Amino acid sequence: MAGLGERPNPPGDYPVVVVGSGPGGLQASYSLSRLGVEHAVISQDDSPGGMFRLFPIYERLLSWTKLETPCPVDSREYEWYDHNSLIADEPEQRGVMRDFMSRTFMVPSREDMEGGLAAFAERTGLQVRYGCTWESTRREDDGSLVLTTTDGEYRCRAAVFALGVTTAWKSPIPGIEEVPHYAQASRDREAYRGKRVFIVGKRNSAFELADGLEEWASKIVLASPRPVAVLSSVRARYLQPYEDWTLGGGTVVLDAAIERVERRSGGFHIVAEGTTRPGRLELEADEVIAATGFTTPLRDLGKLGVQTVSQGRIPALTNFWESEKGSGIFFAGNASQGAAGLRKHGVGSSSPAVHGFRYNARVMARRLAETHLGVRAPRERVKRGELVSFLLQELTSAPELWAQKSYLARVVWGSGETDILPLADWLDRPRPDCVAVAVEENAAGEIYPAVYVASGGAVTEHLLDPQPLHDFRGAEYQRRLTELL
Image 1: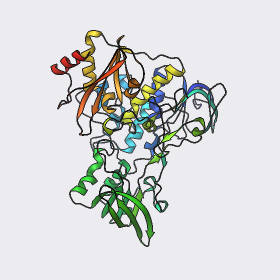
Image 2: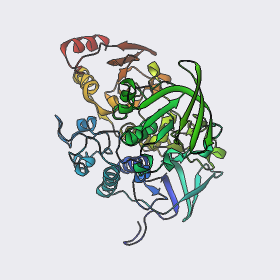
Image 3: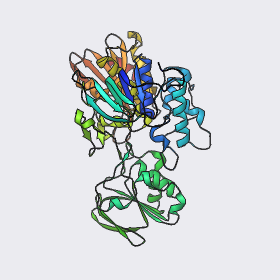
Image 4: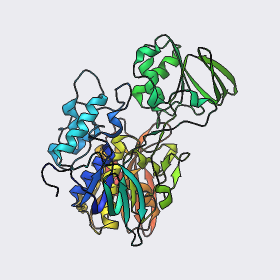
């Protein structure tokens, strides 16, 4: 250990190295530490927080932390109501974000989130070497990874890259180089007073801009080829501009492919082609902002076999968030959206958000420890007579299953051992007799329990009926699940 006053995690040999001190890196480090896995955490930043040190630009998050709930703050169930805190095994370390919020707004500010992450790192004893920038990576003949940094070289058997999706990315639209990206937009909303603002994009960052500028801009237009996917794309708090459009206010939401953006005297001319409703569109705007997303800064990882998806913006990952099985190159944080999962009914995972990827990091840490280090993580056991009530309770209130619908599942093996696992992986590999349950949502927005029973080498899927109050512990569910098992 480094002595007092020294920076922790000096260059050297470690079983695992974690790169990044945002929520993904901190959650991965916490999960590894609770498994007893020695590791080093390095970060180019000078404090924890990752992207939350800078974004969202208008300071309000879209995810809630509820202060009054039916369950204690130190319980696992409280995570169901708190989408911003990192998760902890120790009850006293749960619900940290609650200490930073007031009742002035329903969601935390960027500053609240940054403070909560810093407090989690301090309270749980996480050691991060700040001001240490990862520069390159190579693989040695013995299979180990070597990370070159501004402080020296780190050698490890596995590395977790919690880099975020942090580098501004623009769609290849002619003329888009003339306009600022979301990350470069003015944080002074006064700069948009009375102006016509055209926003390229219709996902969270686009609606955040529209929401923040509604009281300032005279007219706002949001445009992208695909319709708004409310179930999996734009969070509810950012739908105010969408409502303004449907009621005939100053906001317009267009399904249109933008062909070019032309700078003209005093503003911009935008040419687009309608998609949902075909037809040529030409618009004038005083300001154009490209809310076209971000990309993961992979540096030279492509030379080590890391593939990408989403137009090269996101690393392609296995179900356990490894670039390739056995590669030892893992990802945590919102880059974990590179593992697609089943995408049942077209609904994606919640891995781009803290309340989703915090669970991915815990599952990933267990997988890494077992497959690369030979450390078997402890597992709970469920008694046979308690199996039905246990599974129905999980379906009703397990935060992992509700945050990651159709993506993470509660699995109980024939021995009674139980774990949270990626549903896609469980379905894809050979397994002994066991059962997995997941909370799912169909294209109509109905939420229901799903039960997957493995028996004799085959898997059968059973979709149970929705329940208006999402309470699946009633007599009919007990009868049905007992029959299935």
